[in-house]
Image (cartoon, rainbow, N blue to C red; front, side):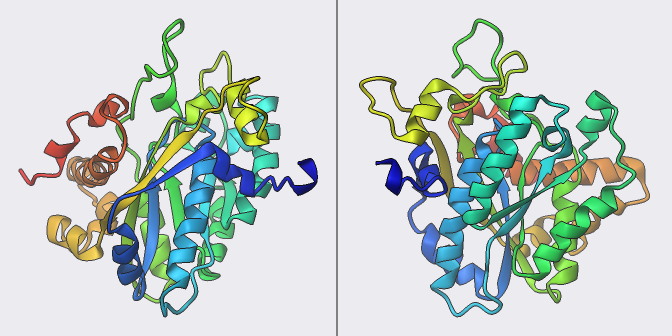
Length: 308
């Protein structure tokens, strides 16, 4: 059994990939003349496993079209506090091990310093532009960006003593990461159109607890990944629901041609309002791809999609 064990392919064993009917054809039509930018909901560090599985699926679909240039994969940022060990040695080791598996599936991950890293770990963002350079380089090589939106795993945490499935739910996205990465992509892709691909991830906490007092791979998750007999330890999976595409024209119709520069508005009040409206619109769509109890701040997501 172990002679045939392929760690990168074993990621499939822990991810239940769900495709909304009709998505494949819509995706292939959309990416022939546009670059996909994937935005995931986020609950746990284990979400990277699902992102790698989704990456390979999307690359395969794009390969069935006459798209030029070829879509080779996606590039994603990871919290530098996890990569450098501030979040704990176990997470650091797990990151470096699994990053190799993600890369084999086409997902290239590079560290960057989040605002949360500055606040919680007193790290500096002085080298942020340098941190973004390798990601931009990969974009030029056929790897558009993908992000785990909201930037933290608070959504997948549960209160002490509660059932792990009773999670806090999605946190409201307030940063400008989507706009920043969209502009970066637009700058390097010859001004090709961008389409947003939304993916709902749920259940990563079943594979690895995001709670600060745990932060370990669960025995059920490890048993599933290794393929151990279920009679010894029950298996578990997380879900990745792929199905929503927001075209560039939709964003322009809703927010204007300069929507990617909303965070550059010199009027501070207007800037915050516009960035929040864009974030809420995108995350409202994404929230509809995960169970209602996991939507958290986006529990009334449908209301965010209707123009006021």
